Amino acid sequence: MPSWRTTLTGAGISGPRLRDDYTHAARRVLRREPAPYLALRLLAAPPLVPALAAGLAFMNLVDDVAEAGTPQQRAAGLAALSERVAAALKTGDSPDPLLRAYAHAVDARGLPPHWVSRFLEGAATAEAGFDGFAAEEDFQAYLDAYAWPGVLVFTGLQYRGGPDPEQAAGWRRFVDAAQRVDFLADLCGDLADGRLCIPRARLDEHAVTRADLEQARDTPAVRALLAAECRRARTALDAAHGILGLAEPGLRPVIATMTELMAHQLTAVERVGVTALRRDTGYGLAAPLRILVRAARRRPV
Image 1 (cartoon, rainbow, N blue to C red):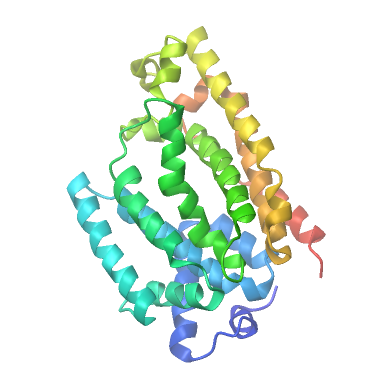
Image 2: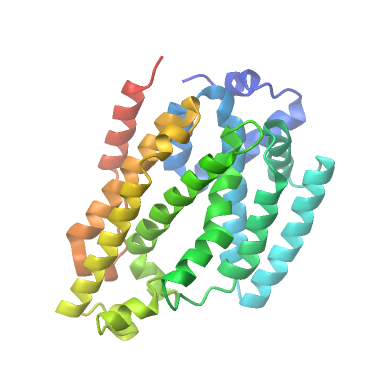
């Protein structure tokens, strides 16, 4: 793995200020999401790493603002952030080094700005005002408004000029699977925060109440509901397998690793069953390390 300085140089990032900006963004990712950061550094083609690190840092920043404080604070924070992002994309400059790095990455890679504005709009509506899903249609609308553009403000930077329609559709399938797995893995924490991420219609189908989930009741109906949600997630994950062929070659080892980690986490949720209502289902430590090491060994030199 080349040093960070060498990686910046190989990506054509010159000038002390800009190099510091990208370093700032990468460090933010490392602090918040060390596993994805390590996957990028170990597995992605070095010329892609700085832009993707800036993209992931930006995605995380928007997520953080959309989830912090009261609904009014979230709305105000996102409105202010949207103004700063628009100015950064227009001028290439910002008081925030993260936004300077991201604006440079968007310009250098040619990512269409509409993905950025769509993500910010979705953050202000679908995420900041989230109150659960009535039915599957509402979940799909959430993906279209927020989760799909959210993943493309990051992964879309792999493509010169942004993703084409086939590539974008592939990432739509990927995020469908990723969001289902994430919601299942975070059931306990989400419920503790007042977020019910399983459509209410499906609770009704199984005669399960929100209180059943919040109190982690181990009943046949609750077990059947969770098993059905896991099957939906497994089907979505199978449908997303084609994403590897739509990724740029320099990012394919990272995408393969992300998919393997998702499958590992879903298997863990399936295994623990109702326990997923009592504690969140993490990756653990051994499995991600094992998957990363195996992927690094497969990566072309």
